[in-house]
Image (cartoon, rainbow, N blue to C red; front, side, top):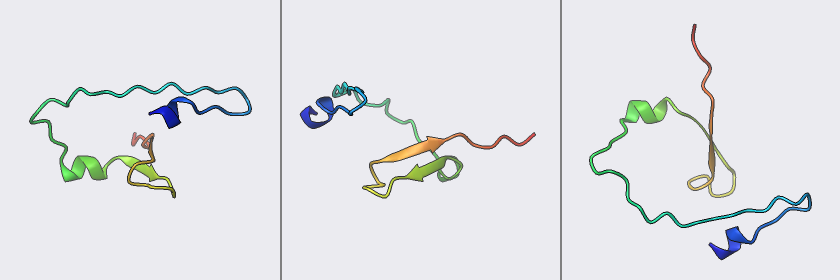
Length: 60
């Protein structure tokens, strides 16, 4: 937390981080199909932790 919370950039971006100790509601499940439908872009550095959810193209 301290490492993330003290990060800055040359341009002046400052990061604030807080630990969320709440738990998710029990019983909420995401199906394999729902997960597969997400446009997930994994980062090269620890893609299991660092990823982006990208907008999906909308079918009209």
